[in-house]
Length: 441
Ligand code: GDP
Ligand code: MG
Image: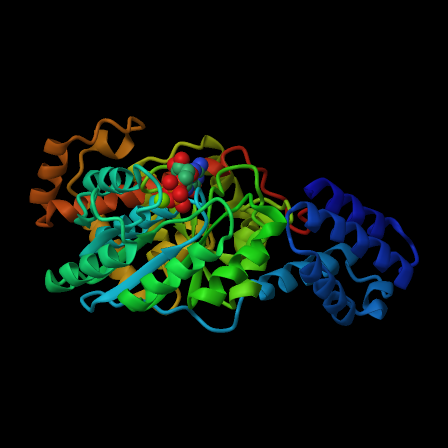
């Protein structure tokens, strides 16, 4: 996909006369590419129409950077298509919310339920899992195993065959136990069947969820729209989670799911493990859809923000690729100072959405300072280590004592480190373009 889009845009920028015909040719090429990426035909057509309205042919002809203009227009248009205009219901810590997961069998519901619970648990919530899947043999065992591993309370039954009854009982029980996030896992079938949708309707009626999340496998392709719409017609889907983004699929079906449910994507699943779960970030997702790579926007920003004389240092840090706790400490210092490099790092996918969410800068700063206090209690060996096994329990306990923070905080800080190290490892070997050089689509 990336190849054909860049070829199309390349052709465009090579043409000396930009006329409507050339723009059309370019758009047709991109259309084919987006279809290959599983974006629904109708959505691609809509985008095409909008782009034609936005891209001013006179601007192109006047010798402005054509590639840039078209790239930006397409990028913005796709970002807009992922924004349904209203945020999803956001559960509040300490206040009971019921969240119901729906989706076809194999889409990743049970896995994602646990990830969602675990994600919140780490932030101090009291989640609980209810297994209302009585259709698939072994469904309860799977949820039980996941929940036990994450130390999350669960409810289900081997005997009871009525999913509605189990869902109702489970939600009831956890409400009594003052859990603030009660997650209901449901069954799926291989096909869209009337019985499945009727079951979902009944489970929703019995549990009155505050939020229904539609879970979608990123590789379902063009089927995404119909699937999402079918669920939306039986229950009030309010958010989407796209799974298996670690695979080959670019996830263009997410655009369809957003269009069909008029709900935003809130998380993506990036692996089978509990912590392979990320807050959805529109821009890196669209970059991937267009084959631009997660970090292309970041690379553009580097040129804008970092003065030339600071680039060698940055370049060296990036090319080394190993992310030690000391590097994290230094980056935190930069972030707090919001010096040029701090600004750059705040634009990185992992740094921006999770560590410093918009509107919560004060809170984030306090958190970063807390992390740094704990890191002040670390030895040089710990700060410079590249061995993930070094940080054992007795070291963590010593750091907790030394900094006067609970062990839980130390663990949270180390989780954050692992997450950032993952983002960092993606940057290894990236070439930073020189100022004025255009990044390629
Ligand atoms: P359910 O039938 O909808 O409950 O789906 P499951 O949660 O049982 O998941 C089906 C399969 O997909 C399992 O093997 C999971 O480990 C796998 N899976 C779920 N989410 C992801 C993901 O984000 N990445 C990868 N690689 N596998 C996933
Ligand atoms: Mg399941």
